[in-house]
Image (tube, rainbow, N blue to C red; front, side):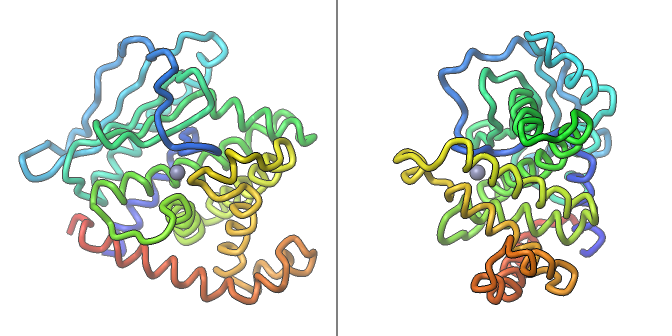
Length: 285
Ligand SMILES: [Zn+2]
């Protein structure tokens, strides 16, 4: 069981270029032009075959129309990041239906889970968005690139959280967006080592920068996502709660207020235990 969970989370370590549900909405952008026809056929992992009872995670690369995304697309394809991720996911979990993992040019910075197909779509525009956000904070091009990959890892796991909730009809009470954030933080922190910690920190930084860039509008308050300020503190609380000694500096330097920090250890334990229990029945034995 433990090995299967390890396989599951290793998937996410491999998917450095993938993104997830973004700042505003998970929902597909229905107004965006549909990406160009697929030229690369779906590549089902060789060791797994769909049957009537179970599906598999499959891969789809959609062509990019803009030259500026060509290099990212090439990297994703050449490194077979999606294929490796699908293989690891299939080794860890048995989805009830086939699930497509794809990259695409979407027309807006987003990434989303689509229940109808079902599929997880990662938009190249989101990677570009992250890069620009970190670059605007004064980071060098190389560092902004690194932090982009880290933040993308957090967001991708958030999106996978939505997929798992839907596919397995997981009994989530409360805000699903918050549950997906906690799923991402849990897997990153527990199973991805330094890469996972970097992912949480990069996401927190992106939330912080995003809140300062845009403020909170009426639409933000009405949105299903928590405010970026809240996601910033929640991410740091999960990290601090996972190891209060190791991350004491977050409290010492007042990044995370002491009033919240006192609750984080129990808060993290509850999220960790909940996600572990929720996924247990669906792991491949
Ligand atoms: Zn979401």
